[in-house]
Length: 271
Image (cartoon, rainbow, N blue to C red; front, top):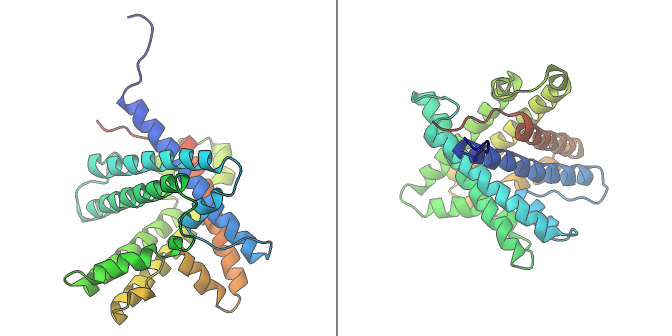
């Protein structure tokens, strides 16, 4: 033809996916880094994804960074939705495959909401400062008001626990390997980081799921909680400072895993 190439749908999907993985990685690097500094007594603070984004508002060019991250998170949500609906990773239509694809769809919704939150910070004065930790309680409270609300909260808790188990297995058995095109010399240092990050994120999901199950059992949405509550719960335990440092490093490692996905993950465009 004329020697020029036109980007196709696969190129756009790949760009959105990789930008999305990078944005997720930056968020978790901030969450893990802030928590690690707090555990070491160096002035950091424990916070969740929304709190980390709020902290960006105080950084130079914070609104620009938030804009870049919010666009990336939208791309990640679109990619997650594509993975679920088009089954790009070939999970299939049996019970296990549908459960995984359903989890991907939930992930798409979660990150889309986080993207909107990040974008909203650009046009406000940084949010209300306390809402970042109340998302899980708000969700549990809303579910409690629905028919069979107590059971709905319990189902959400069990689903989160299931996601935690899946993350742990994925990390421990290195099931992420089949999605990577990574040189062997990079694998030697990267794979231990990926395993650690996935296993710790799985443990965090187990705790969050347990909070939801407890909220359902006690019919009290205030018992539910997200990452911020995980941090506060760990900190109140014996050796809490070390537990907090362990989880913080794990979430930081998950951030690195996400950045590695942005570079090396095999992105299968839908057919």
